[in-house]
Image (cartoon, rainbow, N blue to C red; front, side, top):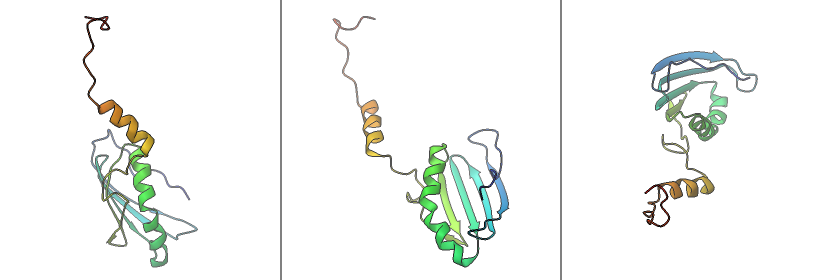
Length: 120
């Protein structure tokens, strides 16, 4: 069952510490604790032992979904064990198409020649 956001913040750099209990028919009750800010969010989950593997497997997707919202998942732990988020706390790798666009934007542009520079 989807849960409401753990805490509202006043901006992307506002630090927060919040906890909530999420009842789930598939996983059983899951205790969720978040701490940090959008630039450095730590998430700790506590669940029944049989649910931990499912939650850990979803770590990379959680990191990707948060990154898409502009939030960096710096750490994720499940039942006290640090879980792999697919990026070691870094934002997930971009798809090749997006990487090509970003690289093209970062590439130095040749100076415009006087003949084509209409603003000179």
